[in-house]
Length: 194
Image (cartoon, rainbow, N blue to C red; front, side):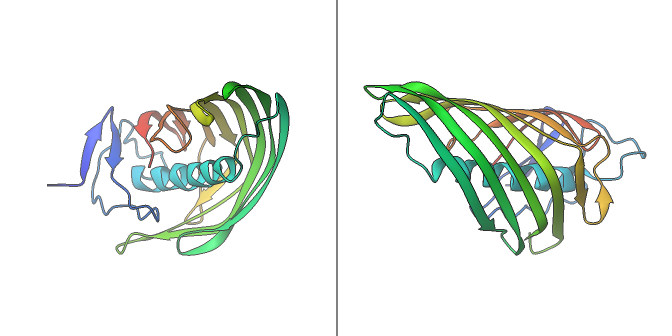
C-alpha cells in the first residue's frame, strides 16, 4: 500500500514517531505553480517539525489540580537528525475537579533542524514563531486543542518559505493527530499532521 495519498490536495503522509518524512516522490499539492520555492514535502516537513515541538512543550507539563494555574514552558529538544528547537511561554488556565481550559502563549525557534527520511534530508530554520490558542481540560487531561501558529521568517533547505506560515491547528488533544488548516510557504489547504 502506498504511504502517500492526496487528501484535500495536500500530501497525507504517515510519519514514524521520530518524524521521518515518508519518501513521496512527485506528490502533488493544491498549488503546483512554479513560483513556489518549496515543494509540498518540504512544506509538510516544516509544519510537522514545528508542531511536534509544540506538542512536546505542552505535554511536558501536566495541568495542576489548582483551581487557577500558570505553568511556565521552557523546552529545548533536539531535532530528529540534527539541530535544535526552543519553545518558551506560558500555559494559563483554570481547573475545577479535572475540567477547565488553558490559554497558550508561546514563541519558538528552530535552528538547522533536520529530519532524514532515508531519501532526503530536510533542514528547517525559523525564528519568531508565535503559537497561541486554547487547550481544554477534561477528565484531568489535556483535551480539545485549538492553536494558531504564525511565522514570517522560515527557510527550508536554504530556500525562503514564501509568505511564511499562518495555520490553525485543531485536534481532540495535544497527543491526538491534529489538522493544520491555512497557508504555509505559499500553499493553502488542510492537512493532517503527525
